[in-house]
Amino acid sequence: EVQLVESGGGLVQAGGSLTLACAASGFTFDDYPIGWFRQAPGKAREGISVISSSDGSVYYADSAKCRFTISRDNAKNTVYLQMDSLKPEDTAVYYCVAGLQRSSGGAFSPLHWGQGTQVTVSS
Image 1 (cartoon, rainbow, N blue to C red):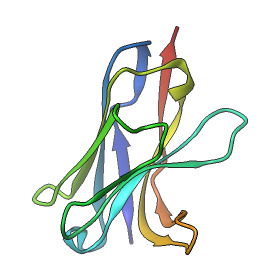
Image 2: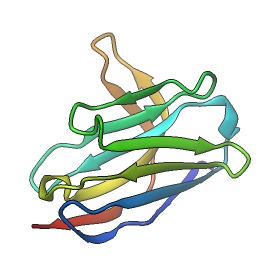
Image 3: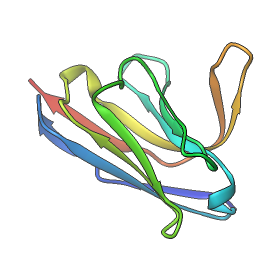
């Protein structure tokens, strides 16, 4: 059974930083891309960042570029999301995702979701 357990969310002031972590189990972590989605109140879920399994290539949504950094530690079966220069509009539940498929239009569709961790950015 695939399990994705997020940690590291919390309350931070605008301009601050947070690092989210996701411990994965139930699959061969090294072999698959993994990433992060988020869902803000009243909005659809949004793919934020994905990191590949092989060459370390990464994807960032425009909202995350230049502020967020995704990384993975295959020895620990863990993926991280370093978030800097946080804005109130980054307030959302952040989900670790795996089992990613990508459409011809470029959108990611995860098969597996963590339970989510709340990030709240105050102004």
